Image 1 (tube, helix red, strand yellow):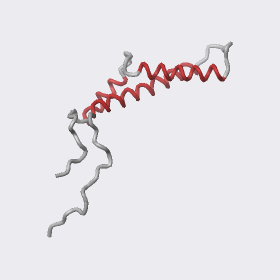
Image 2 (cartoon, helix red, strand yellow):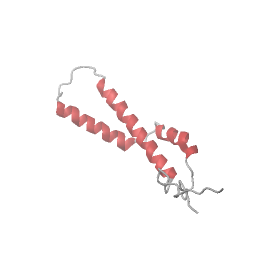
Image 3 (tube, helix red, strand yellow):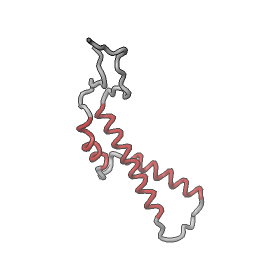
Image 4 (cartoon, helix red, strand yellow):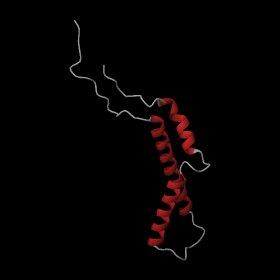
Length: 104
């Protein structure tokens, strides 16, 4: 007795055109998140009372810190994105033609 599937299996993850580039983008996103939290933590430590303290100044500083983190992710000497990319690169196929599932 021979059993055949009713329908073709469907992958839940879409095939990536360039998995290495996607991995690098994710690693830089993680570094951006880390740097943003680092800057936020550094701003939270206070050496004294701020003479310009207001909610508008605080919000502007938060936006500035987020932009600094975004701009410096992957470009600084921290190496967080490089370490994340090295750690997960063995799970990613270097071939751009890799598909999650290929039908006959």
